Amino acid sequence: MSRHSTMAKECSGEGYKSHFKPREYFRSNLRGLQRPQEGNYLPWALKMLHQVFSHSGLHGQRLLDVGSGPSIYQILSAGEAFDDIYLSDFIELNRNELRLWLDNSPEALNWSPIIQYVCDLEANGDTCESKSERLRKKVQSVLPCDVNQDPPVCGIDLTFDCILTTLCLECACMDIEKYHQAVARLAGLMKAGGHLIMVVVLDETFYQIGNQRFYCLTLSEATVREALMKAGLSITVFEKCSRSEFADAYANFTAIVFVVAQKNPEKE
Ligand SMILES: C[S@@+](CC[C@H](N)C(=O)[O-])C[C@H]1O[C@@H](n2cnc3c(N)ncnc32)[C@H](O)[C@@H]1O
Image 1 (cartoon, rainbow, N blue to C red):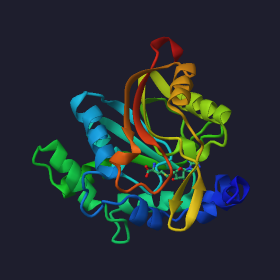
Image 2: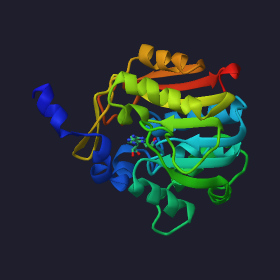
Image 3: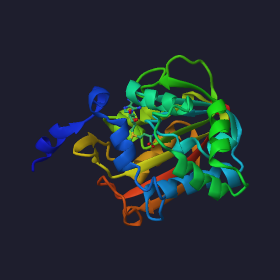
Image 4: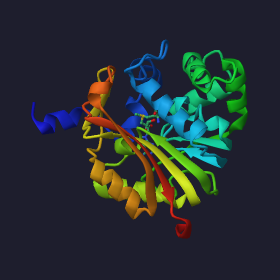
């Protein structure tokens, strides 16, 4: 199949609004939900997030998660380390899924096995119910966002101690220049000395939800490092895990990287 015909099937940009199916993404791409097993993306990401928020002592007042999708797994450890949490996504369908979970609706996606997994990592006797309740109280709002626009997040005029973004910028940015701009925009929302935490896929051209392919910007390790550096951020963690470690790969990446970068104090 030619590159052109492959590209034509890949959804991007505004296409997310009609083609991204939050429930199918939850069911098929975040595999390992019912029993988070070793060798899947989720337990790896949850352990990395647990490490940085629970063991490394990263904490603060305000955290913004950019491109949350319908997901809350990425804020489970952060919820213990930050007072106020803001979620955001490009499409209303995802924001609705987040609101259902925040409202504890019977219609909401069932994150309980994942929450329990993080309770087990934290090992402080917390229950899934009490952790969920605490987290719901900390989430201040679910905001529209577009990392290609200035400002990237609508309806808020705040700076953040921490910005988190998992598997998002490479889906949203159509070229390397836009990727650099998006990273710089996020850095612009951060307090001096604040942290940007990203989960990034390397060398991916597409990912799939069911039969629908989504575009992905092909990123190298060097590109990610350069974007952070140009945005005035210093990398403190860069943990790379190769594709062979993941049993549940549904895309053509070569590695996933967990990055923590700190905003230089003079750049606020
Ligand atoms: C692969 S999903 C990742 C969702 C979530 N962060 C996770 O880890 O499960 C990619 C997300 O990027 C969002 N997205 C797409 N274009 C975007 C844009 N221009 N600005 C911000 N987010 C965007 C999509 O709506 C989708 O929720």
